[in-house]
Image (cartoon, rainbow, N blue to C red; front, side, top):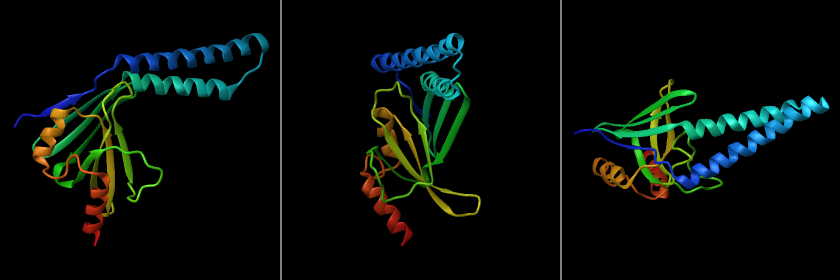
Length: 180
């Protein structure tokens, strides 16, 4: 089987919003610099916050995310401003893949959460919940947020029957049954 992959899709509307944010924080940074230059008022926190927001916005815009699927692994890769980052998940350790639903307090506690999707991508966010063994040999619940296309989810559903597009409550119940 060849690898199936999906990449970031840049939406024009999201790009305009990000560029407007960059212009806004660049304007605030310029005001802080002019205030220091003309009035001799040095605001370290204002400059640091403006620079911090600009770095985060540039890293979110410039990053390219790729999800690859093989027979045994689900591989996430990010190439961005701060370097490369990748994560491989064995398909056997995946508890479920579900549509992301924000909640204030969840029943299930995830030890690690990673984001492998761009702010410029207009697709819906999905969550892959999986089990990982830590250095002490203890199981940890982890999750990865990503934005796949329909064909990628279809192929993932073929490899993981019954675990894809399920409700997040079913993932929690499956984890509770496994613990008992």
